[in-house]
Length: 243
Ligand code: ADP
Ligand code: MG
Image (cartoon, rainbow, N blue to C red; front, side, top):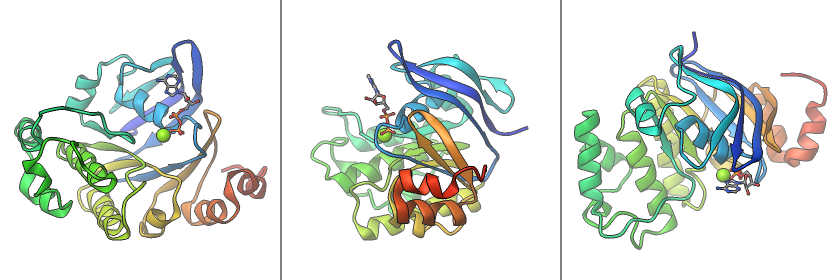
């Protein structure tokens, strides 16, 4: 039995079908990458796995350790061990980062200091959350909060966008560590090459276009083709191969 299974999941926002018939199986300690052009539905898919209220599963089902969580609220999913680092961080006012971090780490019984040092957010912890943070600082803070929950499945939505090259290396090393040392499962959404080149052990790569996963395969095969040719021509290269 997989840790996380999507069985022909479709996701609607209002009455529009944004994601269609996506099936995925994620086992413990696997790193899955989802790539795809802007607007493909990647963030919507992650929102549906997390159970965010602006999206609705309008077909199929989501299983976690064999339990049907399709209609669980997001806090129940967080308790089970699913966490999401958003692509665009929400805005808070007057909430100290350290207070949020302490609340999460005491609830999930995690070591906030070590992770803070790894992600270099110690100085940020003294400030109001996300307030005046640069793009890279936001990304590190968001990832910090997601990983502080010690998740069994971490959904990382473009953690690499807008971060500098040094931070990129830190992110890649951290992702590699949580997957292959801690056994956390990760779904990483990205459409940029640099982070992928720094992740030597990706389990599987999926290409999402117009709401559907149109190709899945061996990352050492899929990623170079997409990075070289882009999605449209890359998919022609794979054409009919199956995956
Ligand atoms: P990606 O993350 O792959 O760039 P998204 O999942 O953000 O794509 O968006 C997929 C499609 O769903 C887009 O056409 C987007 O406009 C639409 N969409 C996403 N969220 C909402 C929302 N809250 N309301 C209306 N449309 C949305
Ligand atoms: Mg997105």
